[in-house]
Amino acid sequence: MQIFMKTLTRKMVMLEVENSDTIDNMKAKIQVILLLSPLTFFFKNTIRPMLIYAGKQLADNKTAKDYNIESGSVLHLLLALRGGH
Image (cartoon, rainbow, N blue to C red; front, top):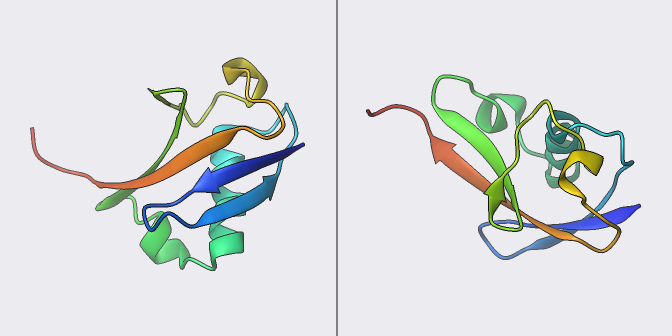
């Protein structure tokens, strides 16, 4: 199915996913489409990519089906800095 990803720069990106795709898998697909460096996008110590759908932060181990993500849905990609208390 086709879903859409909205970035912080308001760029809209189409993504082909299956109901069984995990959120982590979707993030990997986004990385390829946006040509983001793995070190920039997934640098575990400083940057944490987050996907938001229907006002909820999506857990990496859950699937599109777990969140009832349907064809045409729009998810939001945020990059959060790790750290702090």
